[in-house]
Length: 200
Image (cartoon, rainbow, N blue to C red; front, side, top):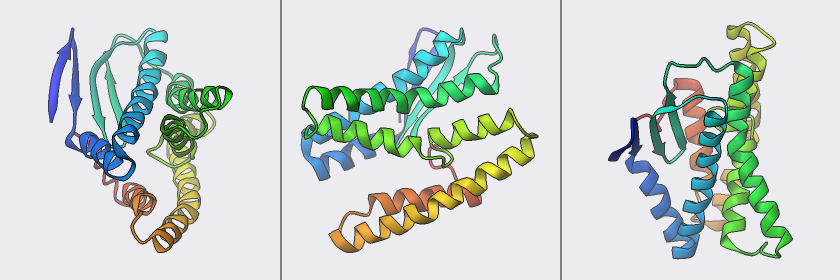
């Protein structure tokens, strides 16, 4: 674990964050690892920018393999609508960077691949990915909290079944690429057991 302070904000990098970058370097080379790191930085910076735009300030930022956990000061109360936009800011930034890469004919670049993968994964309505969190916050504005969380969990499981199936097929075809299957299994454990490996 690596931790330091930027003003009053504590920034913490968990071991799993560095493991993810190492994993990308192993399977895609140094360029792939760098592209993944840049896509992650853009993604998380967009979340932070959305929070700052709403007048909130981070007190603690924890980065792990599954993203960034941001704790804000108690000076402002963020509504569910605010949290929807904060959640979507990350994948929207990755979609924008992927689109810009296409415009400049960089569709074969590692940065395009990393941006597209980040955007697609975090757009899925599966908790604790950004799309799933945005869905839960949206539903909480329509229904009681317990009902909203129940609906969100059902939708997450409905999307997880084909995702896990796809991950298994990828593993069978490649004989080595288990990353998608591992992600699906982790998300299932998170939903069923609330087993959050991204916790500090």
